[in-house]
Image (cartoon, each protein chain N blue to C red):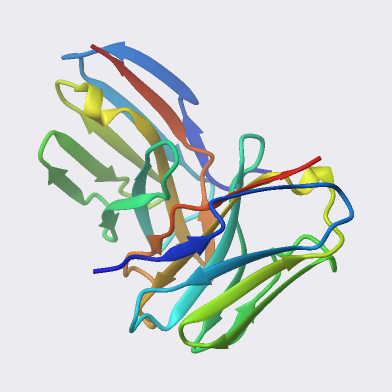
Length: 115
Length: 109
């Protein structure tokens, strides 16, 4: 079975450029999560969706970050304009909705470097 | 303020030794999960503990949830190089998902 699929795996770009990260959740999972991981701050929840609707975006650092989920099988996280401090590994995870104790299944992440 | 404190941050031990890592909070949480993350991959769920005092075993790994549901420990018996990775605890509190920064474990062959 395919797990959570993220693309690209690596992205290197110059500051000021727009960055778009993509995620395909596991089929049948109704909840989708975007995380950012750095050595300094660990794994931070940015935003999550239930049934394609954003539920909690309090972790989104600022207006330069936006996330969309146009349908049940696709989500994007966009940074515009990007800054060097946005460099991190960004993870997408999905889960069946309802019981928060259900496991979240993570993708392998996008390693983002902003020069 | 870090809501979930994990200790130690780093641990490097010889194969065959035993070890314990900890996850602590000043707040009560409804449930706690442990994940393991290997380099270049996302975290993978190991266990969920819900009841205070609960103990769960997963082969050589023993997970304990504190009686007051504010802390948890992970004990590994006879560590093996395959146990190397970042161990993360995650709590649910007031519908918030919070991860600790993790314990980076390295088992030397």
